[in-house]
Amino acid sequence: MHPQRSIRIRPTITAGKLVIHILFILLCAVCVFPFLVIIGTSFQTENDIIKFGYSMIPKNFTFDAYKVILHEPKVLLNSYLVTIGTTVIGSLIGMWVTTTYAYAISRKDYSYRSFLAFFIFFTMLFHGGMVPSYILMVKWLGLRNNILALILPYLISGWFVLLMKGFLQTIPEAIIESAKMDGAGELRIFAQIVLQISKPALATLGLFFALQYWNDWWLTLLYMDQDNLMKLQYLLIRVLKNMEYLNSSEAIQYGLVKPGMQVPSLSARMAMCILAAGPMLLVFPLFQKYFIQGLTVGSVKG
Image 1 (cartoon, helix red, strand yellow):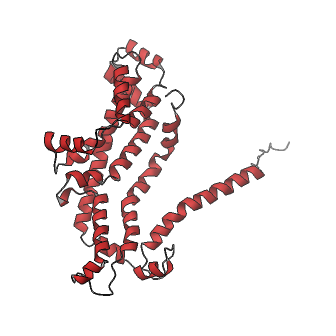
Image 2 (spheres, helix red, strand yellow; image 1 turned 180 degrees about the horizontal axis):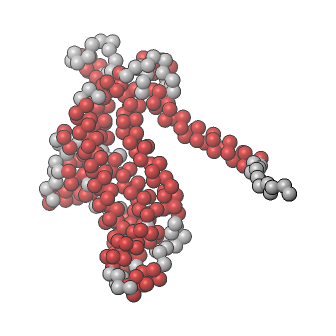
């Protein structure tokens, strides 16, 4: 008797699947190409950019843009620490505040559910504006040159609350009722059951908060005068403004730069993009598997 042979079924790629794969490869190439151009341009000389434009492969490789930006590494490192600290702390507290608020208005047995839902929806339509916000933060709370001024304004958002509410409404009420029958309190139900089920939505919410805090420069402009409390984005904006001024005729007139000398402002813009967006580009793949699920789950009921 011959031994029984296993039969392998080779997957067949149809013409339709091949076309789809090619389209996605082209789409990925189109998405990656601008980043490669930014990286290549950051290593170009100012004259090459003016003559030949932005290029993925620099003709004359140079670190001039990075030398200008990293001229004072302690200031840059301090701004990184401030940005990372506000991003981590603000994202964690913001996720807790947003999730608890969304959980309250998602429970049908909560008495003040309608009022709180209307309150958060009303803030999405009407906003107090910059002047009342500034008076509240500076005059009433006294948070001028305080790290809390970079965290508190973004702790809760109406859109984030509604997004989280749509997800929490998909949790079956039978799970909560069975937990109550077993003697679990509301806080225990929320911490040990609701949060465990809501990991995809929490990951998506955390990514939104992290992007919001990381890319913020407006709060630093409003509330910070001290250099040790500057966030990364605002510091890079100041560096870019200074380089643009050094390339102006006024800087040559006052003797700040020599005639014919060019400060690498164009390549520095690309270098600043890498320094500012690089960390978030590394963090995003960690949340990617939860991102689509967190956005789509609950979209029908929400």
